[in-house]
Image (cartoon, rainbow, N blue to C red; front, side, top):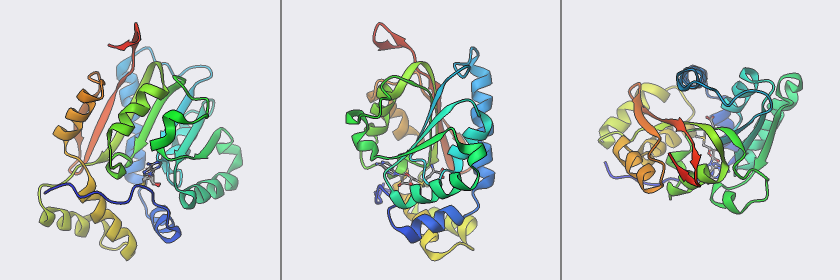
Length: 238
Ligand SMILES: C[S@@+](CC[C@H](N)C(=O)[O-])C[C@H]1O[C@@H](n2cnc3c(N)ncnc32)[C@H](O)[C@@H]1O
């Protein structure tokens, strides 16, 4: 199946509410568990003392809040270009201030990140994103963001959908995973599957983005994961 892009930002309030109300807890929990597994594997963790985590395309904060609970001493930046999503993230933060005081949310389009004045240049020790890549019309934006944000030794962990081979397979997955969901979420899910990349496409992207150290692998039947550690050696990667 050919890739068919979808809108980048989820700016519609109904769309944001439908997304926020959906139960993604199993995959969100597994995202954190896989991240911790990867950090433990990679040894010599940079996540000690004061450290900075950036969650790109944070949406309503599903992953951001889990990061805050896992690392209560970290400073966490959740970045999204949809105010509708961030309004929900901020409401959720307000409801449990005692747990989420270490999160700051920013309304920023990732396409503008490298020219932003958030003060994040080469300062992030952990960069994550969940289900952002397939939204981007130009995926290199995400790979450039890593060069911009990563501190030496930063951990990178992204998860996204994999594009199925055919529209029939995509419709089957829509039926399997969101048949009970509101129409708007079903529509978005199908559009996301069509907009997603294949593992080979992502491998090619990271090669041309100068990020050969990143690994790409499939996870379960519908996801791909991208992970690695960023090293600055003489201004180059190793
Ligand atoms: C499918 S949601 C995932 C939200 C969240 N990461 C999660 O796991 O629940 C994708 C999010 O990426 C955001 N997004 C897409 N393109 C973006 C861009 N260019 N800049 C900033 N945010 C973007 C959307 O607005 C949306 O909130």
